[in-house]
Every structure is written in structure tokens, then in C-alpha cells.
Image 1 (cartoon, rainbow, N blue to C red):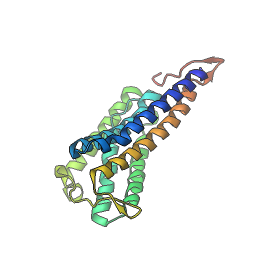
Image 2: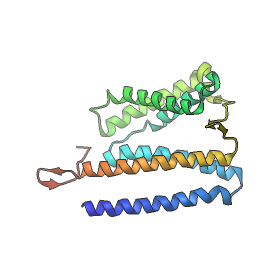
Image 3: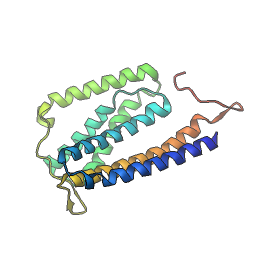
Amino acid sequence: MNSIYQALAKRQRLTQLVLLAAAAVFPLLVSNPYAIRLAILSGIFIILSLSLNLLTGFSGQISLGHIAFYGIGAYTAAILSKNLGVNFLICMLAAVVVTALFGLLLGLPALKLGGYYLAIVTLGFSEIVRLVEINWMDLTNGPLGINGIPKPALFGVKLSSPRAYYYMCLLLVALTSSSSGISWNRASAMRWAPSAGTKTPQNSWA
């Protein structure tokens, strides 16, 4: 079984390198800003899908609240950047911390839930977050969203072009994919851990 996982891991790394190389040259071949913007949005949703895959793909649990955490992180970074003038990197770290705290608050009561029950809880949480974001006009500007967010700057270099945004997003996708691969190996080892002398997958729905 270990040889199968090693072969799959090598194939996954090779596929990732090929896709990364193709993605790196994409903005050099395509100059249309709209196409680059679509690629940026695709990268954002790739990151979201990788995080969801850790929960649903490896543990077998169904979560419908990922978009809520995405919104919490996005609004945290936008509010800190526009209203308080906080540095871009600090905004990113703050978004991670705030989102993790909400995840902890949701995760602790839901520790003993699984399957459809967890899906219902996360769906309800997602709907609560959506309603708060739409109706708290003073904080989120409601359905109009937050406009005039300052352009991010990394180490003194301001990102002002779609191509710069694209490469920043590509870097984040690569980092997320790399960490997801490490988690994939660990989750696979745990899923096929020996139990009572036999190697059987552990069913999280049981």
C-alpha cells in the first residue's frame, strides 16, 4: 500500500510542476486584463477547493460553510486595510487569525457531529454570516461591498497591475497546494493505519 501512495505522490508532484510552469507563463502569453482577472478568480477558488478537500476528501465530512470563512477573512482584511490603514501582510495575518477563531467557535460545539448533521450546522453558520454581511451596513456596506481598498504592497513594492495580482495569487496557490500535499500524505497514512492487524480504511461516517 505504501508503494501505491508513493507512486501517487510522485505523480501528483509532477502534475503540480507542469501546471505551475504553464500558469507561470500564462500572463506572458495573454495580455487581456479580463482573462487575467478570470485566472486570478480561478486561483482563489482553487485555494478554497484545496481547503475543502482536506475536510471532505480525506475525512469524509461534509461542510457547507467554507464560503462563510472566506467572507470573514476577506472582510477582515478589507476593513483593516481601508478603515485603519493596516499593512497588507498584517491584514493577511489578521484575516487568518480572525477566521481561525470563528472556525474554533464553530468547531468546538460541532466536534461530535458528523455527516449530514455537520452539513446542516455549517450551512446554518454560512447563512448567518451572509445575513450579517449584507445587513451590517456601517461595517460591511451591505450588498454594495467595500470600495476603495488600498492596493497591496509587498516589501515596499505596490501591486498595481493585473499581472502582479496574478503572480501573487499564483504564489499563494503554490503554497496552499504544497501544504495540502503534505496533509494528503499524513491523512492517507492515518486513513490506512493498521487496526487489529488489518489495513482497512477508517470510515468517518460510521
